Length: 154
Image 1 (spheres, rainbow, N blue to C red):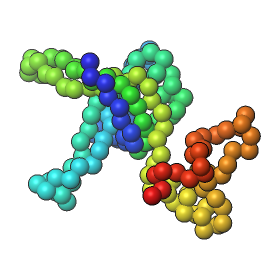
Image 2 (cartoon, rainbow, N blue to C red; image 1 turned 180 degrees about the vertical axis):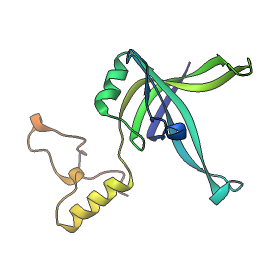
Image 3 (cartoon, rainbow, N blue to C red; image 1 turned 180 degrees about the horizontal axis):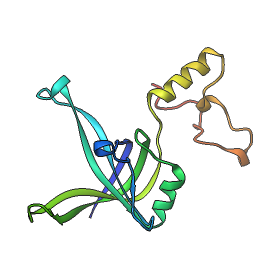
Image 4 (cartoon, helix red, strand yellow; image 1 turned 90 degrees about the vertical axis):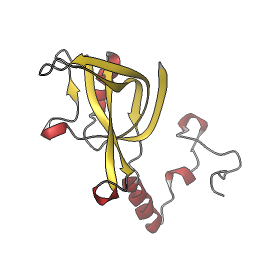
């Protein structure tokens, strides 16, 4: 199996107005698609969407239910690349498609929405969460650079 790591993946809307996430009858499996808008000079408006199927089984399905994922949710995940094989009921033809089987999933930042919150905080005179120091070692909430700065801010 090939390991897959994805960040800021967007849960795609369901095909033909169907739900974005499809849970199995027992609730122990779920399928959905993630999408990414790609530049394509041959497509209408120079862009097209690439969608990849994702599925999960067992305990991770409960986690996804609790997260209340829906279309447009940004997620980070790890998984493994696999192949689905099925027989088309209309033609009898054997079909194959790549699919990602989830190992772990979490929310990701929403990009523009998060930027708007940071901009509003800066205009109101508030410091961004990254600039705030933790109050005490027991209340540490995230990464704190050694020298108070970040090597990403060059």
